[in-house]
Length: 229
Image (cartoon, rainbow, N blue to C red; front, side):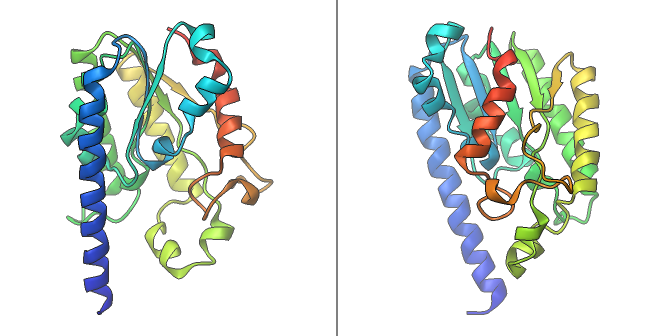
């Protein structure tokens, strides 16, 4: 099997997995309690073990609400818009933490500028959210990556070629501007994740992009001031 065929097969598997997760979330949403806290986005949100932390620290009692996670690995802003009901609106949350768009920091199939594409879609997500929900929106800064680890694998290096410190800073600046536009709050909860070069600490990352629970514990500690209705 050649490289293109392998990539297409992998993409098909990813699409099927996303569809299964969406259907699972759709069914779960029938039983959620409105007015709670929602964490939503891509893999960097899906892998955030917020439910475990919530139970461990009895945060329901401390905050007066539950926390739901509707992250899906590999989700782009295009896919989020297509599934915005399942991933956000149907839960009718009172507080929303969003981390979406890192998968847009990549060459676009139509040749468009990745940042323009990300901003346009993120703007639409917030427009729909504001029109549909009475909620507090927290737009989370994108996490750093560890280039040292990414460079060790040619496939990862190629896949995440555009996810540099400079591009992440550009994207974060645009997200901060969108927060101001829609009366949301931009929050950077990355303090403690950086090494001396401004990358993610090597010990915190699985493969250069995704994080171990130790790193998410730091994120949780930085999020504490916002965990309330």
